[in-house]
Amino acid sequence: MILKLSFQTWYIHSLSVIDWLLFIEVFWQYAYHIKSKTLIRFIPALTLFFLSAICILSWHYFLNLETLTWLIGFQSLLTLTGNFSLIFVTWRKNVRIQ
Image (cartoon, rainbow, N blue to C red; front, side):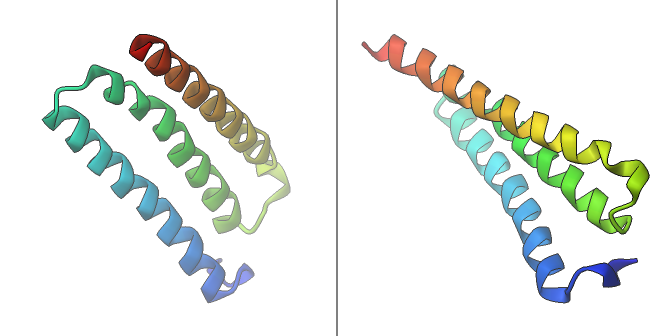
């Protein structure tokens, strides 16, 4: 199954997913350590990007099956929602600072 994409492509995709997971964990630990509710609000938005990466990896893993093309739309929706979530959380953070 994995032969559809090159080893380098799988390597980069897998590292990106692991990178998101580690970043979310480190960000969570930092926000929890400094007791910042504002920073903790970023975590759900970041998790949407992680789930987006999982969607596209799943689609590639199953050889880009025609029946799984809905994953592409779902991945796009997660990315769009993540973008707007980050905009909203950042806006709220900046409003509180002023």
